[in-house]
Length: 86
Image 1 (cartoon, rainbow, N blue to C red):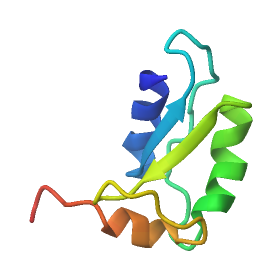
Image 2: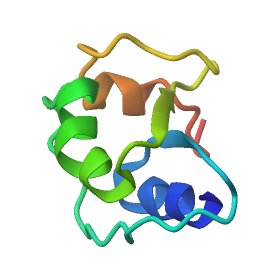
Image 3: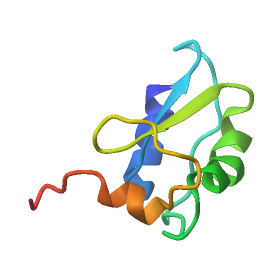
Image 4: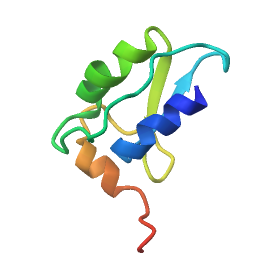
């Protein structure tokens, strides 16, 4: 699961946590471009994450460690993380 979470982090700049056995197999996250910033977390999970992880639970964590509301836009979520330039 950790490899999948890292594969999502790279293009999306979003931290996800997938809950399931560490030995469980999920499909690879092969997206090279991030989803549009105006996409809601709920929509993004439904279209990009759930088809790859199946019935495993997934949560998105914002920059303060909180699980944001599903209607939060990805651009706002990405802005919640501390940048290395700050």
